[in-house]
Image: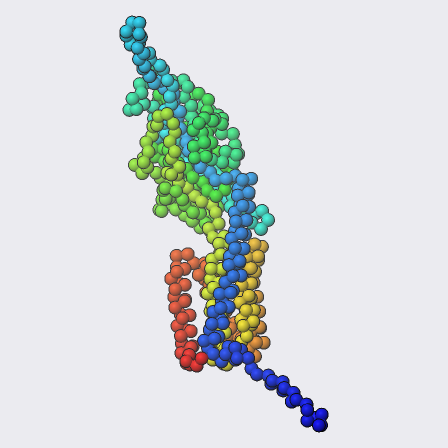
Length: 463
């Protein structure tokens, strides 16, 4: 038998058939939509890491700002001056004597203190602010020259049930409570009727009230408190963040001037609108607080009350720093990725140009790189310059990549213009405060209208 006749037929190699899944992705609109949606969800993972990075750098900035402030001086809160006046009180006890079958009465004399606030208090604060840097981070610090003047009326505690003969006039003193004790740059003294009384640090169980340190003078002249008297004192602070005053005067006024262009007025009372002046070179404002405006009295027994909730003043901080802007920008990352992918999806659907999943992924990663560039560059420059550099870099990269991918200058130019408009729109929203929601809502409505108009002729039933 012929050997050729005994040979079995060899199986033929299959010809290359198109992959069904790949073909489905190319031809089915539903499949492409599912692929784009899945890629957007995947890209949320690196986008979340970008938000973590921004938060970490923001916390690092806060640590550095606190370090700067600790070295220069912390926030300033002044509480005083306050007269500290000792007086006698009496405690009577009865003891039963078994032998005489009578009660023996014993009277003990106790020393307590009354604290009296002034009738008038005026604070004149001249604040020179500047920005201090440590590495790439900055903090607003200031030097404040504060002059306190005021007046006391004769002291009378009979309304508190204390007789004049029980008051120990010769051991009265002046208290002054303040935060940022180490920021004081001058020897402190209060001048009363042309006589100066120096302050010294003092401590008792109440001296840490609201983290305030206590200063106290030596004993005052015995006859001083029995008549009207004026006082004045000066204190110079190196501080940061804010200056606040507790309105201890029955009538308290404060005038503050500074070269800081963006003040924030804080606390329980607002400055006078008629005299308020804020320009790019600084501000000048006045406050006036009457006794009827606050819920505390002028005299207290036994201890000085906590009154920090009634403080008012000015905040010296950068209102919106670079990390806050970067964080707000990153919140729109999902919108940027989604709209960019939507543009490519519409181009792919309308022009029948195939775009691979890997190409979508590269475009998405380029969009995420915008935020890392923004954060890193803004640490060495201002936010606008960083935003421009990062935006132009990413737009050029994606435009050139789409030119090589789509083989069409018209489509790549459309993508470049769309990204430019989108980044410009987000920058405007970031800069706005009161109208951010309104502008954002109107902008998204217009984007939705454009997408609906462009996609109206697409046959969505095909796949």
